[in-house]
Length: 142
Image 1 (cartoon, rainbow, N blue to C red):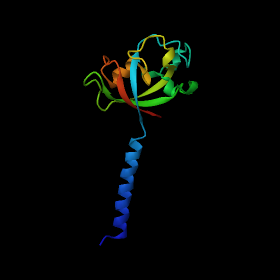
Image 2 (image 1 turned 90 degrees about the vertical axis):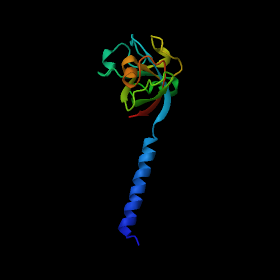
Image 3 (image 1 turned 45 degrees about the vertical axis):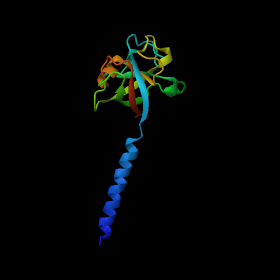
Image 4 (image 1 turned 120 degrees about the horizontal axis):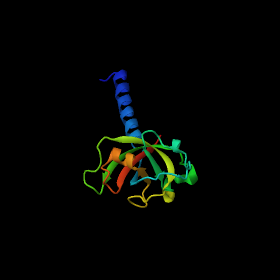
């Protein structure tokens, strides 16, 4: 016969595992391409060079996440799930990016149109082979 403490510990363990599963599924799935300099002027911060994080991990937002400019300055955790280029993703790599621009307004041409985010060259290279034209990504606002 199980003691009440034993049953409580079993249910608590089950609950913690369940919470972890739901927490892990909080991310969204999307796509990403990359763009090259010039990165200014941007729709969010104009020509202000201090808009870029020191890591150079930043992105332009598509209309789906642009939110009438409210996306400016938002931070996202991003990881690569897959790409059309075999073995392009760097397993286990997750980076934090900052939204600094609107994808439809960027000065340079992205490697693929219509993606959820257009990453800086440094951001894409941190999570995948920089030759990949586009990626399937997992992203979560922080």
